[in-house]
Length: 176
Image (cartoon, rainbow, N blue to C red; front, side, top):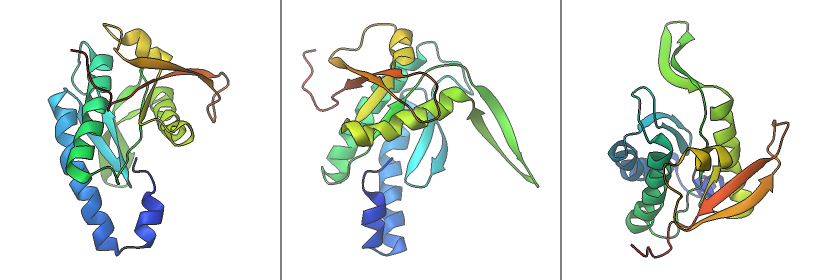
């Protein structure tokens, strides 16, 4: 999701808004593919990326977090620090398949896991983090993520229990 996109759109023509989104998607979609993910569908000024469907991906949580870090870095290089994006990651079971009706079908993923990821992304606006991931994602990582920080437990709209969220600063210098 692009931070401040509604305000940005207010001051530019629709064509300029679409041009910015297309430039953004030209940067992030290849990163998703490079990490074995699938750019499932566009949601206005954001997109839903899926790792582990439609093709199985052994280390899908690692791939999702690595892709998120790389997306943040490449967006900053390509589009400057003025354009900021927020990324929420969650791991869990989904139904993957074709949904639709009235002559229009599309492949997508459905389930609480997807809804929770969207809510986690929304929390990046409140926390100021570039990216957040859930405890379920952390548990699914094959190796602990260097430089990750536990941000605490958060109430998530529509969820009965609080979620533990973690963050990684994608702009921190790597020690590797």
